[in-house]
Image 1: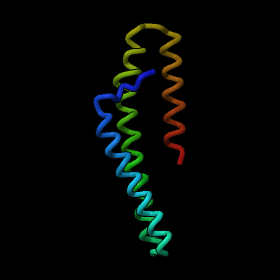
Image 2: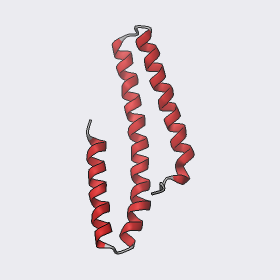
Image 3: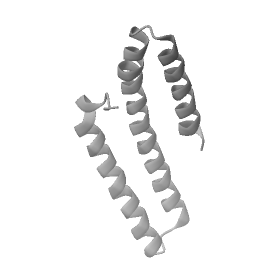
Length: 95
């Protein structure tokens, strides 16, 4: 199934590239034996940025894919979409 996020694809890719840069920075910090607290702060920033990307995708999924499935009035499809959403939220919030 195609993503409902196509209008935000450039923003998502920009955010992901920034996260990639942050992770590479953390690798450099570890390689250079930087202070643990400084590394932990950077890890927290990566987590926050990744969570934001996930939140954007959740929003697009809910406003696009899920709404479309619900509008089709197919009870089996509705149940499947709700189960999928509950499952992905559980996985996403698992820390």
